[in-house]
Length: 419
Image (tube, rainbow, N blue to C red; front, side):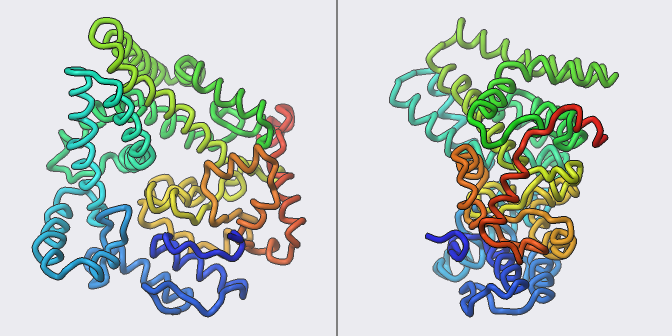
């Protein structure tokens, strides 16, 4: 499979439309299109994406499941299932969620509360290693999608309609520890810290001071987060004079650890290992692997630019299963932007992306961005690049050299001069 030409059939419909528009822009498209769309031009594509997100438009298309686009369900499900199961569920769930497109949020909450929650409680009631391992595998399968649902939750002040505010506020306190998060730490680190600092020199998770293709640097980066973030984040807020946030971040992080300690030592150590400790360990590693990939490429000419310190991925895992997490530059440009709005916002702003030398990849996700960097496989990453602007006229080797130059560590003295 050549990543420079392969069109993944599992892409979401919006991603298929985005890829075809970008390739059309540079004259690299072929005559084939997605079976779910026709060639309608860039402006027609933008309008269609907008209409799909507009609950008042006849072409409104809510997301119900991550595995299948709703138009696919409507073409493949028997008419009776559509009439008596799918449509009634959509109509009901649209009244439960905060944004009508987000029926999938209800789908996920139903899934979690009917599987991982009872499974966790039963492990404490009657533990077996087979059940423990299967429970952990289920958690590994859920954790990515849950994290990005949580991401939408903290950026949008919830995912459910206002009349369900109590449940919307409380469910993370039950689900977070089961899926690898400590209480409220993601909110304080991501919202109050990461988006304030934007991968700059004061960002505790910045990649600037590491060689992003160094295994040793990567190990130091992950290890620092796992072992010291509980202390560094409160101290960051303390140095900023934000005593309230410092105390809250420390309280929730240490309170979560204390709860794990009590459950391990006085309730059921084996159940706690599989229900809470292993998920936490994997999640902390996963968050850093993802952040390394999201901010691995930083243009030394303008490292403070959101266009040049983050990337866009048009791929299957990040966008289909993780609520368009691949549109990371779009997210940094507007952290409050709804996840369904990223593809249309990207297409509307693609000329600015090209002018700013932004990086757009396909057929590779954040994990394999990291893996290929640690293998120094820049040629493969260059093949995954959808060239924009002056990148179009570069050879493959020139694109690989450009990517390599964007992964070099910044001397701290130079980083200070940038500010």
